[in-house]
Every structure is written in structure tokens, then in C-alpha cells.
Image 1 (cartoon, one colour):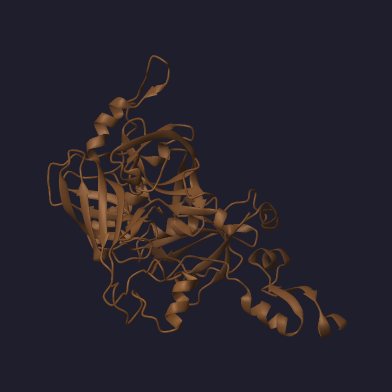
Image 2 (tube, rainbow, N blue to C red):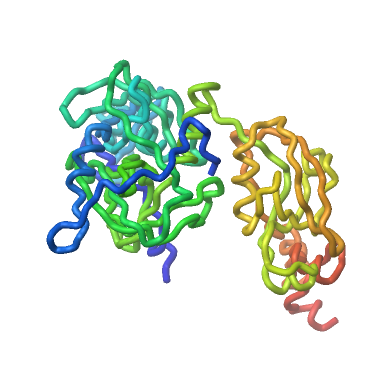
Length: 442
């Protein structure tokens, strides 16, 4: 199947001047944790759930968001004809073409977009998606955000901050006494339970859709810090940033992405767990930015064969593929081939959980790591570094240098993976997978 047929689409609606395009955890603090509330939904006379009372109760706290993002200083703006072959042909022969550097007629243009959000405090804090506020790679400082309530009141919102790694943004309205949502606990949500989404798909304000939780703790490509809630709730462009409610009327997630082969809704939607978002909100309010701990290791999964070779009773944990010199992990004595089983007593079942668990902790925090090494469990302590903005939590590095060197000698070669070095009890090495030319004759 072609790669472009398998992609995750953010569900923000983006409007351009010449047309409109529609592209798309941390533990709860005591203040946010709530006991499971009774359901606000009762079966109707046909035995089906009736969401009317729930929608009336929670709807006033759901908002519609409009964004105008100014073009950066010196940016020529996007030209809708730039990829037209005839347009390029004329430009190369000196015909003046508006919209290119040095050409008149088409200067910088603003990006316009719509999305959804919800009020989390009576004094005007609003949660939404980072890509709603700043686009996929834009600057939130250039965004002018207008928030509209269900009663048609409008507010100019201040962007308190965004976190690209979790796709969470926090806005502030200059108001008080606003309706606010109740925060639920996504850990208590069960696969198969009914959930309700509210938002502005394609600009249709205050639209309600419903479905069930399809899966929890879903891993997505390049999404290290979010254990997504998967649902079959209809989510479309403009729904981004809107709330996902349980039947008690509590928010358990922020609708964020869809999986699609066509660009439209196909029954697979993803929401950011609300505890992840509230952690981001608290940090942005307190510190103005998000801080994450960092160990400084590259990791891989532990499969069944590896678990048996290590003497583990079940395949779990994060296998250390490499340790960054001078990092927190290096100072704590971690080694390639170690398996991280737990952090501060919190069990690590899958390697993808480790960056998130470490990222939830502040830099400078001292953590206890349960390791598996040489057939037995041991405990070490590490003081976390800070994950910088340009740093990405690592998986095992690609052996591109080995491959290039092998090609020079007619060899198809690659570096041993961490699993293979552990299984063979080697420090490292190269696997020759094929040979031609002089190498084959040798």
C-alpha cells in the first residue's frame, strides 16, 4: 500500500485568501482527580443512549476558535501557481510572475484556520490543539485568536503557550464566571464505553457526535509522549482541540487526529488523554514553558525471544540500545543491553512508555530505575537532565555509516542491533548480508 495512503491527518480547517483547504500521561494531580461520577445519559424508549441531557450540561463550556496567523516578516507568502509547469516556464524566460521574490502583485498573506476548544477554569483558561493555534510549523506569537462561546460572546484570546510534542495549546480569555468543564480520569475509561465529541467540523459550530472507545494507550508514529485514546467518533476538519466526554459529562480527552486513506473520516480517531493536557496546562501557567526530564538513552522493544535469552519471565521493559556519554543515564551507570523494567516503581511494559514516564518528571528529579542485567534485577538512581526543544527521545540509531562503508567494498552490511548483540553476548559488530564484485570473489 502506498505511503500516502496511510497517513495520520490533523483535523484543522485551513483557509487561504484564494480558496479554502481543509487539512486537519502524566498522573492526575489531586486538584484534577475526581471519583467516577454517575452517568448523565439514560436509555430512551428504544433502549438506545440519549445524550440530550449531557449535551445541554456540557455544551456551554465548548468553544469555537478562529485563528488568523500573520506571515512572518520577509516571507513572500504561498503562491497557488508556484507548482504549475507553465507558470514556471514563463518565469524562467523573464516574464514577470507575481508572488515570487522581487515580483510585484502578491505579498505576504495570512493563514486563516478554525478549530475547537473547551474552557477548563471559570477565569478563562481554554485548552485546544497546538496545530489549531499555530499550524503544523507556524509561530504561535504571530497568531490572532478569537474564541466564540455557545451564547455568541466573542473574546480575543491570549496564547499562554503551546507544546508541540503533545500538540496541546493553552489560551487565556479576559473574563470571569465562565462555564467550565469537569475533568475526568482517562485511566478509568474502558474500551467499549460510549463517548461524545463536540466541536466545529467544517465550521459547523457546536456539532455533537458520539461513538465508543476503540482502544487505549495507542502508539502513533513520531508521537512519543502521548498514549492516545482511539475512538470511532466522527471527527472532521475543525473538530481539532474539542473535548471528548464520558457519559458522566467529564472530559477525558482532546480530539486531535484521524487515520485516513482518503483524507476524510474513516472511523478511526485519536484523542489526547486529558491528564496529559492538564499537566501541560499546569506547567504553562506556572513556568510559561514545558519542562521534561531526560535520561539520554536510545531504546528498543523486548520481544519474546529476547526475554527468554535474558532470563525474563515475560517480554516487557525497554532495552537500552546505547547510552549518550555524559548523560544522566551514563552517570547512573546504565549500559547497552540493560533492560529498564520500572521507574520509581512504575512498571514499564512497552519501550514506548519509558520516554513518556521520564518526560513527566522535572529536570533535576532523582529517579529509581529497576534494571535487568546479567540475569538478575538491580536498582540504580539517576538525576534527570532536561530534554531540550531540539532533542528527540531516541530509538536505536540507523546504521547508515556501516552501510556506506560496506558499499565501498561490494558488501551489503549493517550493524548488529541491540537485541543481536545481547543475544550473542557481543559488544557490537557488523552483519554481512550479501556480497558482489571483489568481495564475492574473495
